[in-house]
Image (cartoon, rainbow, N blue to C red; front, side, top):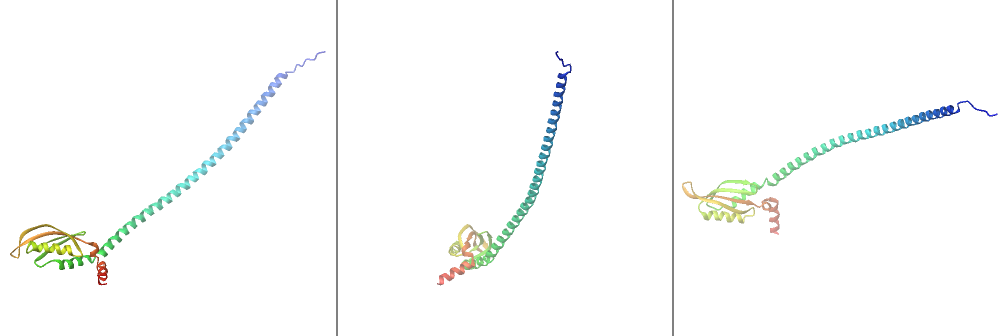
Amino acid sequence: MIRINLLPHREEARKHRRQQFYSMLGLVALLGGVVWFVGHISIGQRIESQESSNDFVKREIAVLDKEIAEIKRLQEQTQALLARKQVIESLQSNRAETVHIFNELGKQVPEGVVIRSVKQNGVRINLLGYAQSNARVSQLMRNLDASPIFEKPELVEIKAADFNRRRVGDFNLFVSIEKAAADPTDQKASGKEQKK
């Protein structure tokens, strides 16, 4: 006799496959959630670590900016002090120069010449004065040129004028200062060498 199975075995197989599908779907969803959670935590930690690194770098940059500003301020102070030092050194080196200039002028001015004004601008000196004749002015220029302190006398003009009810020549001339010769220590050294 033939036995016929009337149980709905196909329905049960379908139901069984459906349950497997849903369980697999749940497992995949759970696995996806775990992967997302772990990724989210890992990325969050990396972001937090990077932000803390960025904050550290910003703090260090702020410290370095303050140090750079301090260095610039110190450099400006150093430059100002160096400028003051140079001014003081130039004043120290030139303090006796005026005495030497007037001493040398007194030696080089010939008789018959009166100096009425002496103006110095750097290494150039402007001399204004009266002379009995043009020859006296020429003698003054030769004396200044032969002087160890002065060089390059240049006559600007000579014109007739009255001085103490006499007819004289009113002259204007420039002369330059020889810096090496104007230094008193150089003169002493050169004087010692000449004596030897």
